Length: 395
Image 1 (cartoon, rainbow, N blue to C red):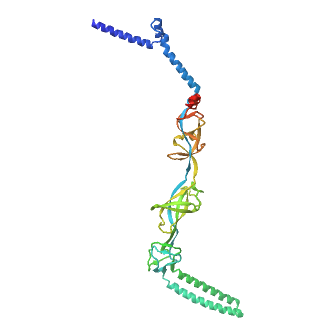
Image 2: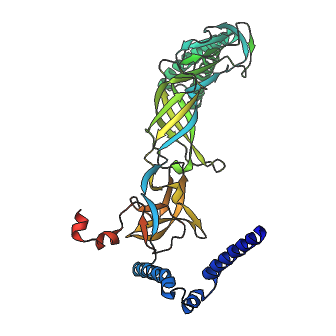
Image 3: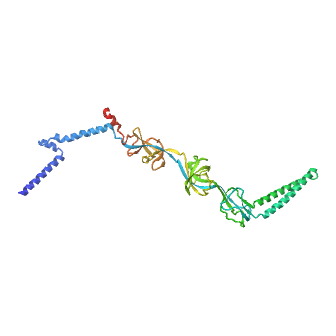
């Protein structure tokens, strides 16, 4: 008996569940219940009737405004100066540098300067054995004196008209030759003294008295380093922007704590095709002699440069025609083609159909179309504000 009751209860539960599912999912179930007098079709359809006006109202509302405006983030385009600072590595050289060699071969009798000495132009550095040259000067002097006496006697005879003109000319010629021979002998004697052609500091001297030297033997190296000439190279785009007399900032690599100022002294007249650069020379005062020729220096030039429009790197896009950005003009998206000049981490310098101050779109770029309406993120909706009553707007 108990098992039968349990079966009846389960069967009733299944019937109730089946009736509920039929009522919910079976088409026309509400009308059938109404026909049987067990429900109201109007009541069952009420929720759908309530929902329909809401959908219709929403569609009408959207249809009145048209498509939704694209929400974007904009940033004004700025400006930046390109290449306003140029750096290069230069090498210092003495303003004047000479290698002194003898004019004649021979044996050194004395060396008159030491390594590192400061010498003046024309100062004797060393001497060669000059005994033979001194004798030659004496002989030439004797011949010259005799020729001068003959010339004086000849002049008296010419005045008295007792000699022929051809004889007088021969005497005059002999006197001139004697003079030239004396000058040559004196020059040969002077060449036995090795002198400094410029003033400056003498380098290390490797010869000593008694050394046999030739015209190829280096006696000394002299450098005038009171002014250093610094050679460096600038890119070809700087051609025409650097002028003689421009100030140049320098720092010696070996002495980074000291700031130095030099002036442009010379510009090369051509650009090296292989490196795309041209040579520049600047004079650096070094009266104290602290810097030495051959030192490396970092050269810095502050140039006026060219001004370009600067935009956020996020705003630059690429298409079949090259780079472009979107800008907002009168609430609409407008495409502007640009050319990349320089790309930095903070900004991209561009040129093209864009000006400083233009509202460039940096975010919300997906789906933008030429002339499409855009709205700045966080800005008030002008249409919504215009639709409010005056009193409400004032609150």
